Image 1 (cartoon, rainbow, N blue to C red):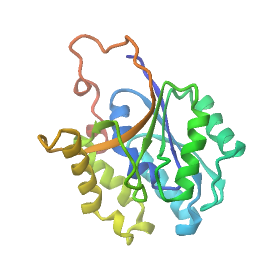
Image 2: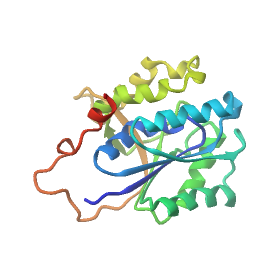
Image 3: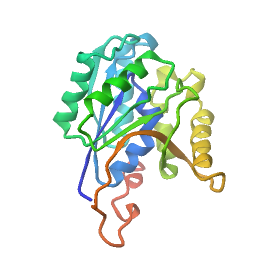
Length: 229
C-alpha cells in the first residue's frame, strides 16, 4: 500500500493525544504522513501560547506536522461553514485521505461540533474515524480497535508534554493506561491483554491494495527506534 496522508483534527491542544496518538504513531511507522489540526488555542484551560507549544512538542515525538492551531474561540466552536471550510482546506492542502476527529457522542460542545464539521469536510475522504476523549459519553460505540501496545508509553509521553494540564485527574497515567487496557479487553472479548484505541467508523473504503507479500508493519523502519534516541 502506498504512502497515505492522514489528518487528525482536535478541538483543543491535547485532544488528538488523548484520542488517537497511538494510532497516529502506527500510521507513521507504516510510512504514512501525519498532520495535526487544532481548532482552538485552549485559552479557557490555561495560557494559550503555552498550550500551543505543548501540543507542538507532543506532535514532534512521532514526526507529525502541526499544520495549524486555529483561532476559533475555546468553548464556542460551531458546526458552521467557517469550521467546515477550515478543516476542508487542510484536507485539500495535505491531500489527506484519512481523517480523525472527536466523536459526536461527547458532552463537550466543542468536540461535538468539531465532529459534525469534520464529517462534512471529509465527505470525500476514504477513511473517517471518530475518537474518544475524557468527556466522551457512554453512548460512544466503537466498531474498530487499533493495537497501540508498542506505543502506549509514547502516548503517555505525549500527554505528559502538556504540563499545564497535569493536575487534571484524567491526565493521570493510570487513567490513560486503564482506558487503553479496557479497550483491548473489550475488543478481544476478554481473551487478550494489551492496549488499544477505539473508534467509531464514519467511512472506511476497502480496496484491493495490499502490502508486499510477507511484509508486516514490523518490517518497516521502527518509529520506536527513532524516538528512543
